[in-house]
Image (cartoon, rainbow, N blue to C red; front, top):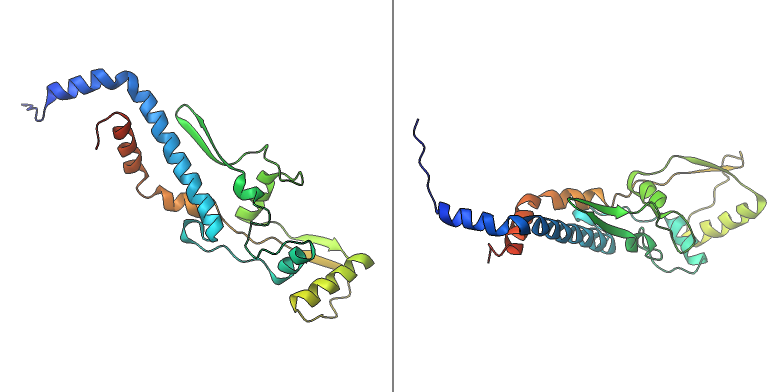
Length: 196
């Protein structure tokens, strides 16, 4: 069996000998750049209410009414104060990169943003809340503000609530996956001076 070489092998040997020490650094820098580009995709997707091009479910009328009572005028999902959006981080460690909400991230009110992100991403379990007289008055105000007709209710004295899924990481990750290998290779080539 005969083997024939094609191409400029002397140039290939020269490039490999000159870049072998720089290759690891170039790969790490390229991965960080790609990770920050993905973080920007998630953040801009939250701001536009369509991460990865998939629209986020808008807040319920009662949620908007509750926000107004608390002094917040915004109508976007997941962006009351911007704590969740601002907590999206990039942590690079050698050849591994984390993009998401750190377990240690806290909101301005001290809540775990990682827990909030998980509930928003996947939805929550149903929660049964016993209605107190004070809560009954609050609900009446919310229903009136939301323009929702008051119903007599079940008479059981409880409210069942559930957070629906509002994925904001997975759609952006999925969209960003397309072409990731080529983008990373192009970034590495630029780091090594092998691409225009």
